Amino acid sequence: MLITGLDTEPGLLLFFSGDLMITVRGTRIPALDVFRRRLKTADDDEVAIGVDFLLYELLDSIADDWTPILSEYSNKLDDLEYRVFDPSTSYEGLLEGLHDLKRLLREASKSIESLQSACLRLLKPGERLINESSLAFFTDLQQLANALVKRCSAYSAGATSTRDTYLSHVSMDLARSNAKLTEVMTTLTIIGAIMLPLTLIAGIFGMNTQLPAELDELGGFWTIMAGMSLFSITMLSWFRKKSWI
Image (cartoon, rainbow, N blue to C red; front, side):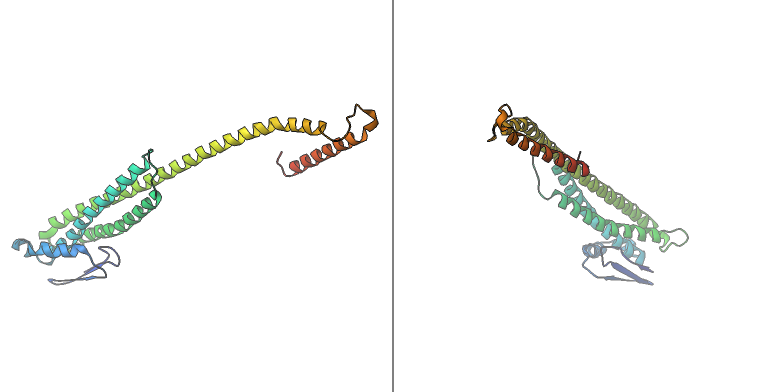
């Protein structure tokens, strides 16, 4: 029997031949140290079950190893949620922290789901790979694996929800900033709308030409007025061509 992917990449391989179990791993797995200590303190009746009990102790050690790790992820998620919903302080690196937590939970989910799949394979009706004497052990292990999978999924959903909430807060802050900018621009536009006619009047009557009331100098004033009108009509035509008005 060969079971692969019971722990983090590159994984844990288990080979069985009679009463012999061989483990092959590509990285250090702390659960194996726990497995050795548990095996030394196991009861003689349990050891007498054989290789099935060794397999159970190994898989159970891996499952137990994930319990404090998921608790640590849960505490980290609670801290990030508090920071996201704390309006009194601006925290740095929130989005990076949430993405990092999502990555850790994704890696944990791969390993825990592999453990769950291994338990399902061992307990598969009609193709059961374990003895009746160890059935209770592996049934308990499967329940633990199912609980770990649910915890991991719940934490991952919580991290996703917290990230979405954070992005919503950022969007709301940006919208408020844009609203303030729009208010400022509106104020400046109103001021400009008031000042433009006054500037126009001051510009017309401040020209160095005589006013039309003085009939001996009509040409200079009306020439300037014609140029201003032509420029205004040209600009309005260009704005309409660009569909700006």
